[in-house]
Length: 149
Image 1 (cartoon, rainbow, N blue to C red):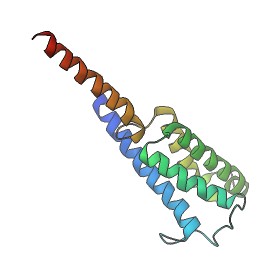
Image 2: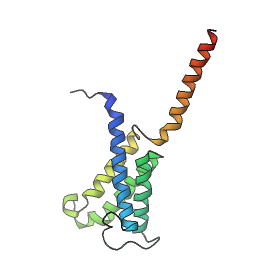
Image 3: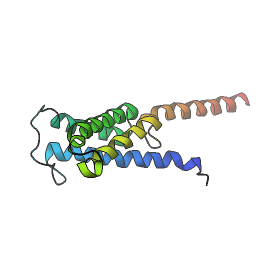
Image 4: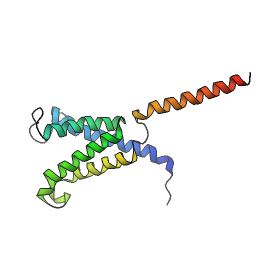
């Protein structure tokens, strides 16, 4: 079955938005105790790795959500989840199901997908290029109209 390519951009954009929102919520919960709070005590300012991981979650997730610097932000988020998986979860067991690392593994691979494929539709980082293209096409149309006068 062939999938229409016209749905790829919007679906990837929605995937990026939801993924970024969920990741940013984790960071906000850990740092500020909102949305049900984090898992345990909030990390102290600058504490390694908890505080830094939460900052990456909040900032990186927000950037991915908005589509600003999407590829580098997604790569950083993916790497932070790989680090979390291999340092916190993998020592407890080989498979994510037995070591509690399913969320870290899923976030890692999902962000890697966004880093590889790009932001999809509705990314704020794409707006300057879109505005420039629209400006050029409207100037061409205006120029063409004047040449006919």
